[in-house]
Length: 501
Ligand code: BES
Ligand code: MN
Ligand code: ZN
Image (cartoon, rainbow, N blue to C red; front, side, top):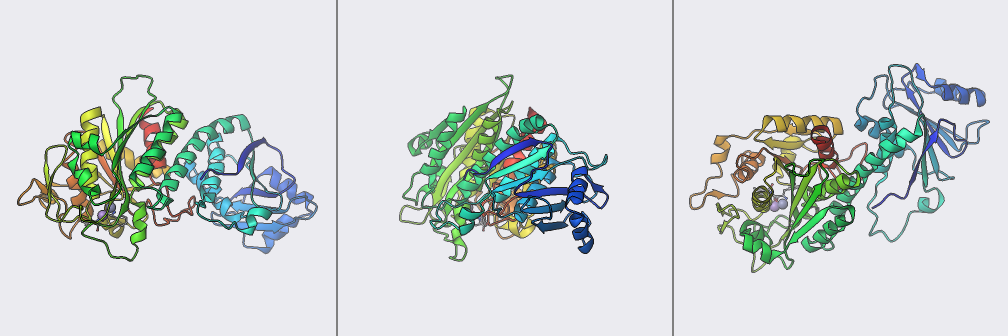
């Protein structure tokens, strides 16, 4: 859902209409404009502050309707706390908080005045651009299937977000790249929020095709082409569905050295997961429309990279299929031969994500010989038990890669927690009649799933992100109010920008 709010960056001047937001870094650091407005209003602002408990700390806000002697409809002061916010992600949160405070305005204009707040509190053009981005991120709504608009849509809908700041040209430049990020996040959220009847594997692949307009090379494999390549594990998952499976490949070649080995990002795209013959209980099954959160992230990321013309070579590969039970569905106990040649005993048809990823990983590594591969998947309920919605699980065969990802997680606000892998866990998925089975029993469910994937990556530096807790189910945050979060786009965009451009 594209944003309908125009963003403007004005030179440092105080807007005179609409809602005006001012920032206060603690008690002492109040900018010159705040003091000036206070004077103009005959001390109304300082009186209001004195009458409240406002101290300019992080969660403090004060709101004054129709301030005296000013033509504004409302004045809001938002506290930032006294410590410098450092990362752009923290400034995005400020934008998100402002969005939460300003639902509407009679003029449709919201302005944020960003000024110098003392030498310990530097604000860069990136920070200012991040405020605008955070505002829009928080405002995102998936309204495609709402036929009755709310009255605020007509009366007080916010049409313009203006940031009054120093060096608006530099801010505009910084904003371009952040807006590319926002657009990719929205793309991922849209895909996750779409219901399963609308977005099946074929429809998803068509959305991927649209990236061609941005200069991404797109290749879509159909079932026959996948069968020729021997992708029987992925195909077995889709066997019980009326809908055909697809493998979508997105290539962005932005590196200054075109021959640079690419980074590969692989996503699980189960557009609906009933569990198959090992069917899931009814309660909450509707959430399984979001079982393509990994694929959505890969697609959103490729959009961001193309929009901001990232100087890196990146391949995105997503396995798209629907897990349904019917007469043609795979059975528990079936044995399938994956593209790698390794055989799998399917103990539980609900452990389908690893079957999809096994072939997607083999295909990616064999075809593109990437310098590293990262997969994202809503893979296990067990990761929710372990980490909740706070962190995604990180599994890796490479400490350097894992370290870089954790760091990008801290910086972007999409946090990762590293989980263990090891020989003893790997043994749990040995099968009596095949090379491996697709479940490892009740214990360490997220790790045995990751061990399964590790059998498909060989020596390639690899990381697996289990995003079952963070991609969907309204993981509420300062910059998201939507069911689908778009998790991973900010993280991987940061990871690529920091290390490979
Ligand atoms: N898609 C689910 C995992 C999931 C659960 C994602 C909750 C988001 C929220 C996955 O395919 C699945 O069903 N995993 C099983 C594995 C088990 C059968 C070994 C699980 O976690 O129960
Ligand atoms: Mn499943
Ligand atoms: Zn699943």
